Amino acid sequence: MPPRLTYHFCKVVGGMAFLGQLVSVSRRMAVLVSVNVGLPRRVDTSRGPVMTAIFKSPTDRRLRVEPHNLEGDRQADLSVHGGENKAVYGYPAEHYPVWSHELGRGDLEHGQFGENLTTRGLLEHEVCIGDVFSVGSTVLQVSQPRAPCFKLGIRMGDPSFVRTFLRGGRPGFYFCIVESGELGVGDEATRIDRGSTGVTVHEVWELSYGGGTDRERMKLALEIPTLGDEWRKPMLARLAG
Image (cartoon, rainbow, N blue to C red; front, side):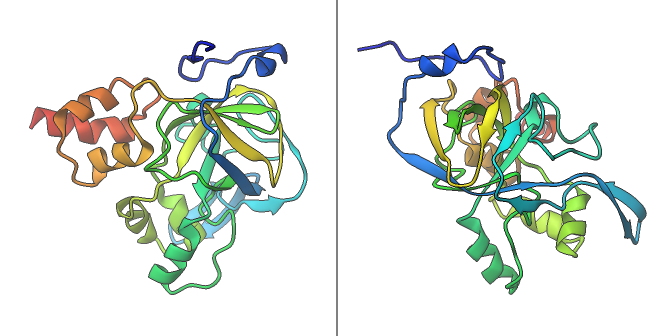
């Protein structure tokens, strides 16, 4: 039986030969139902003019996955968005009908939450931080959940939605790019390795903002190098309390 492949968090690996060496560790498939991109633009708000790229539009084109972005996609504020550990944002399509029901809205469209990849078959309670997926000719690794900023409220036309989203327990997940390539709508996302800690995206949310109290799991989650301060600080505060 071949050895199980292990990846370091968000380590960029070069060469197409890498793809030929991948060993699938899961037969469960997921799929991209929408690929969404957008460029920074000025939006007038009650806070004054704001530059934001949260307005993403679906595209049927196959896109190049660049070192820190999808082709045709950029972030407006690189101090809090983008970069190696927030290069691509994925959000489950399964959450759309739930939000539509809870918000009483029928106008939610793919890309509504600022995601680049609208997925089906990848849910937060099943996806671990550090999981590695082959998508098209690209390899992506889950780096952390998404903690929203005020710009999500701009996109939704409701400033209070930022808090609603954070409390909802459906944060989606960021990917870093392990191997550049191309992807598009209909591509399968095949898990090819599991995160070494076994901590799921939902568990990180639960431990930081959902009332989780398992101190040992907090300590384990804090070992994840790609986890941002927005997730670390609540856990550190609980451990210190």
